[in-house]
Image 1 (cartoon, rainbow, N blue to C red):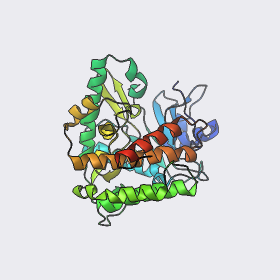
Image 2 (cartoon, helix red, strand yellow):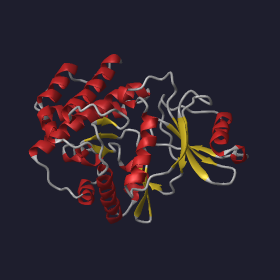
Image 3 (cartoon, rainbow, N blue to C red):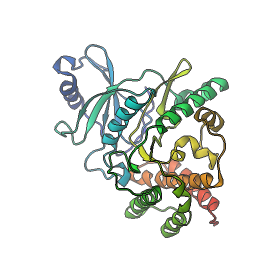
Image 4 (cartoon, rainbow, N blue to C red):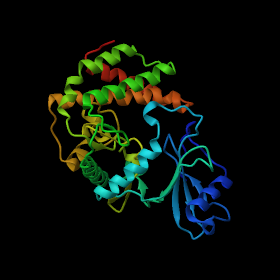
Length: 333
């Protein structure tokens, strides 16, 4: 069993509730019996996920949104609906392997949150096995990740921002600066110590926001396509997981590009870039990437409070990363 990460957003349910969800989704004849039919899957920090073995032996995955009473960050509102929509978009418009959505229940009759069932993806988690792979095989998977990410970015939207948002005509500069404002408001609401003045960060984004004006076409951005969300087997990607943070924006926001301006984060940048088909960056593109890294580090610092982390490892790492990004944008300490 995978190691299970802890977060107060994980909406764990008793066996009786899980059986009721199975019955509603697949019929009473598929209610599991015996022992060991439900296994919590690890690694994710937000939704709880279970591998469920139906009575006929078929494995499926159940994801449950956070409890209604748990406060989440602004951008995390309705993330489960976003994921379901993203899965359908990817399946319809690309050949990138993603699990099929099998059943959705947003009635909140069986538990206090939305949930859905999807196909179980057979494979190894690249975030787990990557360090043990032969270097050439790991590089091959990174090339495949880059190619898959390029295909995802080929999906185009009619607006910038949330997938399920409305076409308001807002520019990418307006939308992205608003996204950062929301993250900063989340941090201020919970009194999170960033190590930097909130207003200075807000001003830094606006001082460099001219770089965002080059982005005029809304592209599907997966945003969370790290190794732990890639399943692999026999030299190929068998599935891409966790699409709840997808939005329409600038492809340079993708996780694979983080190391362009922040090399200490894990991953294989040359392999990803080769698969993606991009190996050079203009000064303006690199400036945009620094802004996106600033946004990422802000989230990584602030979410530790909303998740109720019991250790400071992520907070400390992200605080250091935030300082390095601010320094790259002209602010020393």
